[in-house]
Image 1 (cartoon, helix red, strand yellow):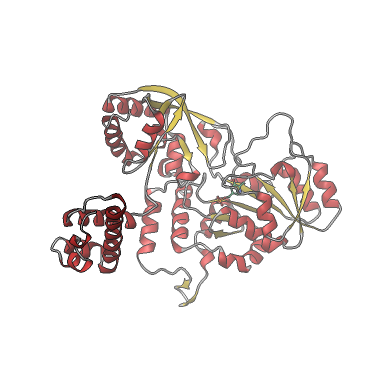
Image 2 (cartoon, helix red, strand yellow):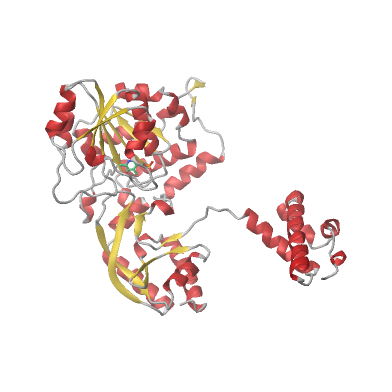
Amino acid sequence: MPDLSALPSIDQLLQGEKTQEILRTFGRPLTIEAFREVLGDVRQKAIREDQALPNSEEILNRTRELLNNWLSPTLHPVINASGVILHTNLGRAPLSKETRKAISDISEGYSNLEFNLETGKRGKRFIHATRLLSLLTGAEGGFIVNNNAGALLLILSALAHKKKVLVSRTQLVEIGGGFRIPDVMVQSGADLVEIGTTNRIHLYDYENALASGGIALVLVAHHSNFKLIGFHSEPSLEEITSAAHDHDVPVVHDLGSGALLDTADFGLAHEPTVYESLNAGCDLVCFSGDKLLGGPQAGLIIGKESLLKPIRVHPLARALRPDKVTLAGINATLIHYIKDEATSMIPIWRMISRDLASIERAAKNWREYIGAGEVVKGCSTVGGGSLPTEEMPTFLLALSPEKPDAFMKALRAAAPPIIARIEENRVLLDPRTVLPEQEALLLRNLLKVLENKIA
Ligand SMILES: *Cc1c(COP(=O)(O)O)cnc(C)c1O
């Protein structure tokens, strides 16, 4: 066994000339902690495995590595070459330049988040961004919370606690991440009244349930990432709201994605829009900020003031309130719609509306730059619980490494990590979801991975 007394002490290490730079970078307490860990490890290996002692230089290197490791964030940017535009695991919508600027501006200092500049008194947080929502949709008012699951929980808690809520069995879906619509409803204390069957619900199912009385709310939920095909039917939103209003029962539409543009204008199937829900007479509509809206994570509630009032004062509204950063980001994103520039300014709409020729050009440029693979036709998807089974034609760079899984792993180990997909043993990269400013970095890293002969 090596002579352990030859190891430097922590005190000696701290005095070392080269340690000073480590101390400046990481601070004294953490550096001491790291020395302790490294020396402990060295001792163990010497005793158990008879391993030779490292010199001081090596100890410093290991310490630096450990410190870097400890402090490296677990959350960092990745390049999305998967072709899934709203990839929930990759943080859904990337933000527009203007949205990022608004977020940065507001986070740098103080703001009038809850301060009325005119009166000098306390102001209301909920006014921010909601005026734009009304301007854009014609809704009487709005309220913004942390996310759409929270919006749904809050609406049901404020309007239907211990009361009956009608919901169709065709809409009792799980929307990913183990999030089930019925579970949220139960959490709110609402009493779920399920009607219809898994594949079919008729207007008379609603009418009969409403006629039996005591119903506080009708909830209509978007099927999200689930598609009913074959023998199925649901009454139209207009029919449901009209039946509910005959009994003075409000209708809440959980729209999920909440499109403000018509996806059908971009060669896709039609995704229900916020306008359609309001026009159909829904009293409240809720949707996500970071799905087809293309903004930061948030839950947006719009509709009738009379229903928004109890929502704003409910204790859960406090627990689910958005921060200034979210409000600034949603506001800036909404402005793109108001100025009718969403398709050119909001990244996800730029991706959805990107023309095929430009994607093909990009794929061919990539192929040329890295000198490997081939350009093939394929599909991108929207994701984010919208437009299930709907695919957009795209062009892909297809690589055929010997070990596709190892190659994907090497891509994920790049800085920043590259997320691709595998189909039929080929690694596919879709230019549609790669942000223009990331393209050069993607190619450089791709080349490095290829040169490392992982391919
Ligand atoms: C995505 C989705 C939600 C949850 O929205 P988050 O913003 O992710 O909380 C709720 N309902 C439907 C129908 C959805 O598609």
